[in-house]
Structure formats: C-alpha cells, structure tokens
Amino acid sequence: MTENKTPGAGWNFDNSYARLPGFFHSMQSPAPVRAPELVVLNEPLAASLGLDAEALKSGEGVAELAGNRVPEGAEPLAQAYAGHQFGYFTMLGDGRALLLGEQIAPGGERFDIQLKGSGRTPYSRGGDGRAAVGPMLREYVISEAMNALGIPTTRSLAVIATGQGIQREKELPGAVLTRVAASHLRVGTFQYAANFGTEEDLRTLADYALERHFPEIGGEGNRYLSLLREVIRRQAALIAKWQLVGFIHGVMNTDNMAISGETIDYGPCAFMDVYDPATVFSSIDRQGRYAYGRQPYIGAWNLARLAEALLPLLDADQDRAVKLAEGELEAFGQQFQRNWLAGMRAKLGLFGEEEQDEPLVAALLDLMQRNRADYTNTFRALTLDQPEDNGLFASEEFAEWRKRWEERRGRGQESEEASRRLMRESNPAVIPRNHRVEEALEAASEREDFSVMHRLLAALADPYAYSPEQEEYAALPEACDVPYRTFCGT
Image (cartoon, rainbow, N blue to C red; front, side):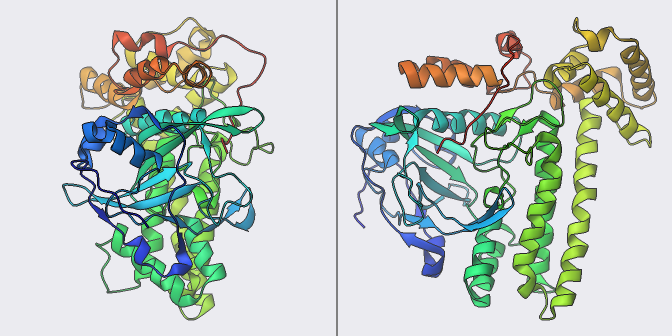
C-alpha cells in the first residue's frame, strides 16, 4: 500500500475492521481513474467529520476521493459478507467498493469512509467494479434527503466523475461516491461468519459489533442475546420511519440491513406518490417481495436470519438458543407497530393515546388508497388545513372521517396551535419526488448539467420548512400510463 499525505485535509483514520482476521476482508487499493473531477462535495458533512472542504476540493483531495491516491493512515480493503438476495442465500462481498478506514471525528465518533465504484475486488463476481454517475448521484440525493427527514442513514460525502465511460446497456459516464456510515456491518456479515467461518470467527465479529455499536452492553448476562435485542429495536424504529414518509427501499436483501440501524445501499429506492401498500418501483422485484406494505414483514424475516446466525452464541444447547431467539423476534412486530402508530399520531397532530387511534389512521389510509391520493401531499394538506381539489377531500366519507379526527384532537389538553406545530414537524412539505430526481439525474448524465441537482438538494435540505421555494417541488408529476421503474445501478 502506498500512503500519500494531503496537508490540511484532516484525515484521522483508525482501522479497527482491518485488524479483524483476514477471513473478514481482502486488502486492496483502489484502481485509479483517468480524469477525476469533483461533481458535488457535502461541505457540512465534511466539517462534522473534521475534514477541510477546501483541501478536499484541491487536486490532491479530489485524487483521494476518486481513489487515485490513498490518504495517509488509510488501509483500503473489501469486506466479505453473504446474504439472502430475494430469498436465496449466496456468497457476496464488496464487489465495487473499498473501505478506506474509519475517520475519527472531532467528537470521538467513528465513521466508515468507503469508496463506491472504485474498481474490481475479489468479490466482484464478473462485474467491472465501477459505477455510473446517475446511480451515484441518486444515492447522494436520496441519502441526504433521508438525513434531512430525520431518518438514520448512511451519508454521501462526495461524488467524483472519473472521465471514463462504463458499459451497461449503453456507455455511461463513470463516477466514484464516498459513503460515510456508522459501519458497514450487515446481517449478511454475520451470515457469512456463521456459514463459512468457525464459531470463534462468529464470536470475534459479535464482540466487535458490541464494542463498536453497543458499548453500553456489559459483560453481565447474555451479551449476544442483548446484541440481537438491540438490532431488533433499531430496525423496528428505522422501518417505521420509512413507512411514515412513504420510502421504499427496493431491495431489502439481508446484506442491505445494517446492524447499526442505518438505512444502507440506495439502489432501486424511491418515494411513493399515490398511496398503495402494493407499490413497487424496482425493475427486478417482479413478485413484489419488497413492496412498500411488505417492508415490516421483510424486516422481521431478515432479523430471523440474523438470529439464526447468532444461535451458537446464544446458548450451547440449540433448543434453548432457538427459544431465546424466538422470544426476542416476537417483540419486533409490537415495537414496529408502536413506533409507527406514534408517528401516525404525530402526523395527525394527536397527543396522548386512545384505543380508537389505530382505526382512525386505518380509515384515512383506506380512503387515500381508494381515491388514489398522494401520500405526502395528503398529510401536507391536512397540516396546512388546505384541502386539495381531488376525489379524497371532496368525498362524503372524508367529511365523516374529518369529523372523527377533529373530535379526537379536541379531546386533548394541548392547543390547536400545538397540534398544528406537531403536524408541521412530522409531515414533510417535500420529498425527493421521483420525477424530480430523474430530471436531475438526466441533466447530470446526459448534459453534465449539475445545476438541476443542486437546486433539488437545496429544496430538500429542510423538508419541514414549508417555504415558498419548496412549492414547485411539492407538485405531482404529470399523469403517465407507464409505471415508474428504478434500477439497481450496477
């Protein structure tokens, strides 16, 4: 490995993952690109990481973000993992990404710094290891929008154009994305250890995960059962947040579920327009396995796979281990429902809890589905008390529902103003509308015009602002007979 120093950039790497046994990774440097050029740099994120944005914009900084230079202190590696993809188990690993190391931020927090699209690795499985500008900008836009919405997520530090074309169905401009994550430990990492390693490998990984993400779990009691419990808790909270904003991940394979509780791997993701639990955008999800309404069930399924991997650590007796795991898994559904219902109460400006709250929410969602109402804009209209001119708000059924809703709000002790404020804090005025995202990606990929994306990012930076500048980004797309489809971007 060649080390290169960029004065003033602020890299402060540690490499705890590299210190794990070689079974978990392959050491490798990024493959240089022809003509790296900065497309977008997340300056606020850079500052929070203790990095100097001006240094990152320099020729040396861009070279590091492109993979042409290895930052001082970095130890690049490709991580090994496995996973269930659409229900089928397979060996995987970082096929086009390299972990540079872990940046220690000024506050002591540890963040993975990963280059995505940095070339072939031992896990590439025939792929070229590269990425296109469009999908990398999609991840940048969506992950930053998710962060602004208050949803745990990996983030994007930069996108670098490579000056090289990559061949897909047609030649596309190449790019490298720098991803920032609490870690890249996945359910699939544990499946890899359980299926291809020894029990000692599995224990080493679990101990590492506990130290990195759950240091509050001490040595007393069953530490590995506590690990499973905490991952379940975080995923129940995360997926509830997805549902509350209409986010569809698109490819909830077990290798795309992070132990940290962050949203990870933005491939064929999108936000729902018309409310329909069966909504699927991914071009490869032909059976609707990862439809919007199925995300909580798939989350539970993935967590069961994690529990299976951890069984040898939960108890030496397999029957007892299974019972312990089942006891924890049973809690997921209740935790998810509790989180989701609390979020729905907030979206409707409801304080406290009443037995009829869940039927009240269900009745609204049923009306929205039957009237093909837009998910985000329905709650936006309720928040602003500005009913839209559409079938939902004009229906007698909605008038009856609204009466029930207002009666429920009136029984609370809080003021009307407090209720409206809660709704504004819980219902985004804007989301990354699919047609707006595509508009930005097309301009960037086809014309090298990144201004459309920058305007979109500015509108999404504070989704709860309800500012006049956001109005155009709340507008619905024109009606189209062809359903919207997203692609994995491989």
